[in-house]
Image 1 (cartoon, helix red, strand yellow):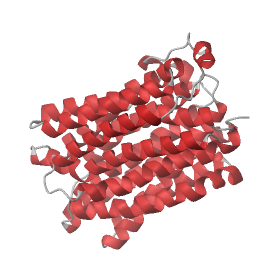
Image 2 (cartoon, rainbow, N blue to C red):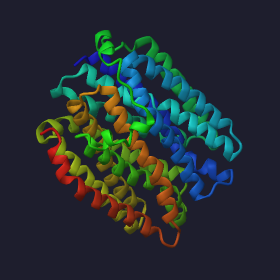
Image 3 (cartoon, rainbow, N blue to C red):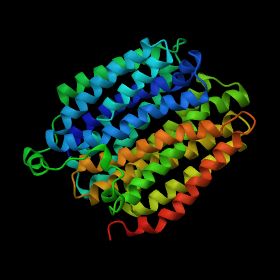
Image 4 (tube, one colour):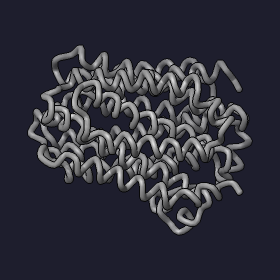
Length: 387
């Protein structure tokens, strides 16, 4: 494993998620100040993911053909411009336009970064490398909200996040080496993935489809939680962005420690199948317990349980897919990210429709029930992956 390259990529992913975390405490409130209702806020989250659904597989395949570094740089500079545009937006229409651009361009970053890890690690090191990227994202998620709450204006964090994305682009341009050999780019040159291929029959009968579906259902549930969580804590306890940031910092700290120090070892010891099942169970448990929360402490505990389960799944899934794929690391992980984005498209508006201040339990328990059914249906298909 090339430690220097992974160190630079770790810092790159940290700053990417730092910028993302900065806007988390403010996104819903900024849209609310412009007159958005809960369904529109869910739609604002969903359009970002819809663009990632379309573009992630294409960026992944492009990185297989042209190299990882160019795609990462394009994603960073494009995301920077879109975030700044969001900060300047003063109508809901422009908010949707800015979020759409951000989704389309930032889709180049995560699948390409995960493919980069697969390029520079052996199969034995793969789990550790993917977990390291998860830890970088978790740390960014810790520090980002903490920075975000320091600003009283809800538009300022978007300018800060845009500046961070641009700075990260300069950093990566200078220090990040290319990981993909020219000979491999020539081998994959004739293959391509279009948006219509994501749910094609070829994809649906793919042996890796159970892993894609794990990404979809786990993200569907967690994205629904993210969409209604600010409304939930505001309606029940009158909590605002400061309290929400504190909860996410606590959750992120625990998740980052797990991913940075333990997850890679757990993957090598127990295997991806057992960890994914465990992650699904934890996510379901956290969602089911959420309506029973009585205080800041209890809701933070249940949020952390949900977050640990969800964040176990993604790096473990990425590790498993990268070991089994035959179509190129960028393309395979891009397809996984497409299903993940599909979950983010449908999860927020679904949860937003179910949520009301009087019947908030229905949204959480319905999402938990969906994940239980999905886990049962995917259990045996997951066991067959790789056989």
